[in-house]
Length: 182
Ligand code: IMP
Ligand code: MG
Image (tube, rainbow, N blue to C red; front, top):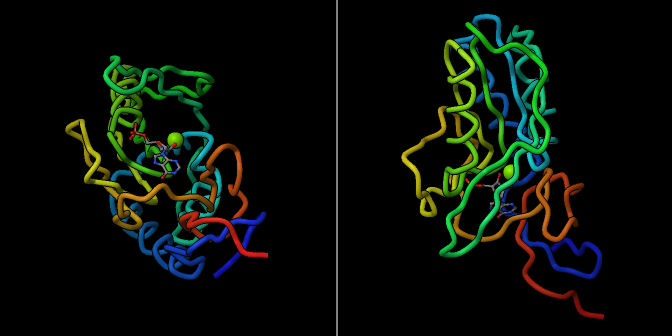
């Protein structure tokens, strides 16, 4: 099992599996709405997935404009939760097909907020691509249009995703299972 910074990391989805899913997702995306396509990556967790998926979109003949939005959730537990914009996009959204890219769809709050925001700004169509779907954790009525993998209810790291700011650089998705010996 890979050991990274003294922790055992159990791989859940390998780099090869992810690359294969990205190619399939790109061809599915190409078959959907792509008029004047604007791709928006939701930072920070999606940055590696977005970079790979956008290049896979190129391989199937798409040439999207690429933007980034930083969103943050606030409130925990029983306190009412919300999402706020930390850093917004600059591009005009009106009458365009928009593809939102995120790492994980969990409660659905983040992506529901983003989807509604883009429709309010006049997007023609908003679709969602996520690497992982933790569907058992869903709280909002929202599904992704393109899903890499159904994800078991573990806290995962790697391929852009972190725990306490660590492990974003791993080329695969894994689960921290404990301290390595020695
Ligand atoms: P939600 O769908 O609004 O609940 O938010 C999902 C977001 O929570 C994702 O975009 C991630 O940023 C974060 N997240 C959820 N589960 C994990 C995990 O297992 N590892 C790392 N980040 C996670
Ligand atoms: Mg996120």
